[in-house]
Image 1 (tube, rainbow, N blue to C red):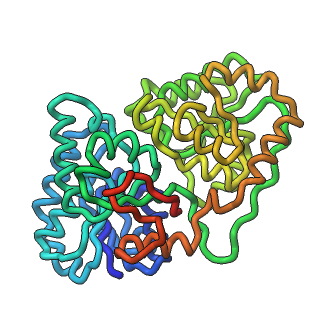
Image 2: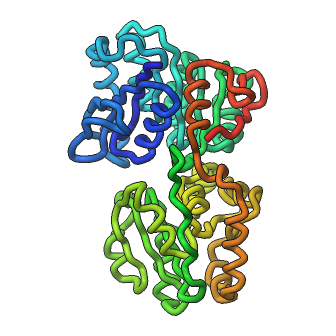
Image 3: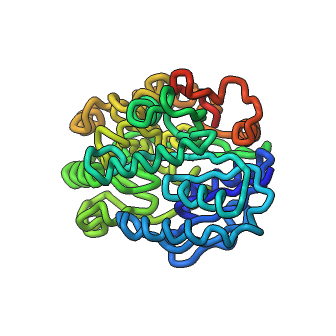
Length: 394
């Protein structure tokens, strides 16, 4: 199945993982996307890539202009996209370009919308927010399938605010942000780090929460006997006053830069806990998302720390593992009371969870591609005429 895949950032590791899933499931994707880096890759996850130009974090006006320009020029890809059986857009800006390409290139392929976050702009009551929701609704009316990474996106946004399940006829599919492991050679879990203070917390992935940085650096500075912090990933510098200076001023807090998927066993094996708390869009997207790090934590043996009252905490509670705080002010007391044998029990709870809760495999890849192609996938794909709940797929 040839698939045209439009994305917001060609360099995003999650995009690479999705492309690998598509290929492992039997699709032949062509990836067209914007980039947040200086240069564009020639391929993504083994699939050819087409650069749509550079965009920037927190510059919505620039991204809107780049999206409009790419949409207007979409007809030039007629030869490249000929024969595509599915056209998929990851994020709203990519969906707009995908639909323009579908129209200008004369493609009869169905449109698929993949949504991994609900931006705060989509949730306001001002003119811009209402206009953005109207654009999204118009595009979704032309789409056959909506793919989300958390069920809370459906229950808190797409159903009540966009009418999915009642006014908007679109099927829904849940694909969680799990690490992808193909073949028989799965890496073993790392040995458990020796339990005892100073307890080490790892914060991996998209580093974008100023409040989390304040919490961790303040506690590490006040209690170097109790806490060390290791930060790995790509900071969204626009979200912080001075990320580098704040980290440098906090004893026991180290920022170690970006990483690859191959680094994950070592990174998680080097910490006791992983930080799965997010306040960037508190009460909104941050309360609804299911971040990559909870799956990576489970796969590689670091106990996740999350807030009990959000979707991440509920996900952990349903599976019976992890540390779930009512408020981050509880962190210091929790670590003070934590004895080595209690940590061993926390790790044992994690190890008892079946591996398929954390990892996507070849079967998940096939089910995803079948769903995109419109083939039956048991109850995984649901008509929006019913309640907007989707089965876990990957």
